[in-house]
Image (cartoon, rainbow, N blue to C red):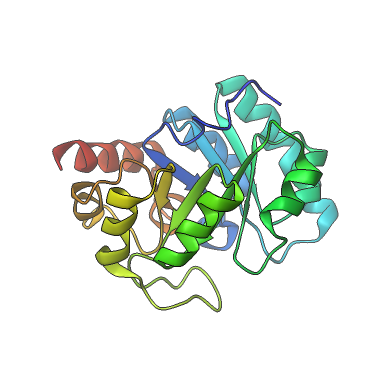
Length: 215
């Protein structure tokens, strides 16, 4: 662990995720390096189709890079991988292991994030001990396979006004719509293609921050 507090892990503006197939031919290490150079303080490793050995090697390197940069590192879905590489957090979905089982595996210090799509799932996340929730997909997204229909702003506003947990909005968020998300009470936004698919990642991060601050 790098000393990142699980209760404050979302105290940042942009939650970056890897997505090598959208990264214009660059590998994840190169892309994460650019994110960290831009001052990003939260990176999630999300690669569904790589072999486990390759994921392990990449995560070890990204763990080292994020620690040096003072950034938090979250692993998507794979609880054992998160533990093995000493990640600061693990992010799970509604159909993954239940939160109580994840907590048993990761111990008391690691942050657990849970994807949610409806008010009852958000309430359940609070009751079962999630450290933060993902709220989305806000807009239609092609990044994720088998994704549910967009939840839109109604659910985002519900969480912002009614749920006492840190949350991150995700799903189809781009520079041209991020202001709408921020204006509805969201201070942390997650993006994949908008960042990893940018020719100049630090410049894109700066543009996104400008758009968020203007909102």
